[in-house]
Length: 128
Image 1: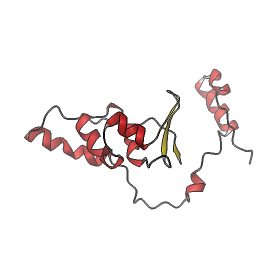
Image 2 (image 1 turned 90 degrees about the horizontal axis):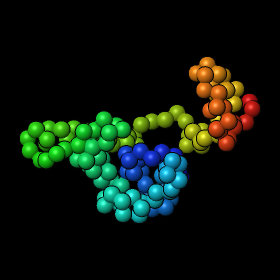
Image 3 (image 1 turned 90 degrees about the vertical axis):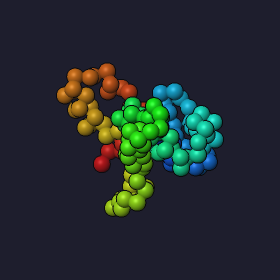
Image 4 (image 1 turned 30 degrees about the vertical axis):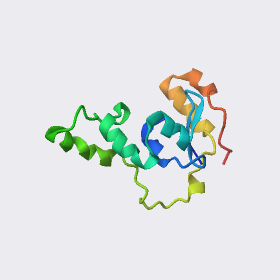
C-alpha cells in the first residue's frame, strides 16, 4: 500500500516495505527502514516524536524543554495520532484513486482561472 503524502504524521502507518509513503515532490519512497534512519524512531513513536519536536504543517508547536508548562503541552500527542478505529461505510477498494474527474477538474480550473493546471493530471478517471 502506498500513502501519497509527505506528511510526517503518516510515518506512524509505515510497516516494513508493505506500507510506504510516496513523496512526489522529492521523488522518493519512504519505507519503515528509511523513516527509522531519518527520524530514529519506530512508526508507533511518531505521535510522541511530533508532540516533542513539533510539526508546523499540523500546528503542533513542539517542546523546547521539559517542565510543568511544557508537560501541559503534551495534549498535542492526541492531535498527531491518526485514528484507526473510525468506522467507514466504504471498503478500502472503494477509496482507491481512479484518476482525476476530467469534466469537474477542467470546470474548476476555468472557474479559478488556472488554465495551465489543466494539463497536469497524468491519470484521468474513467468516464461514467
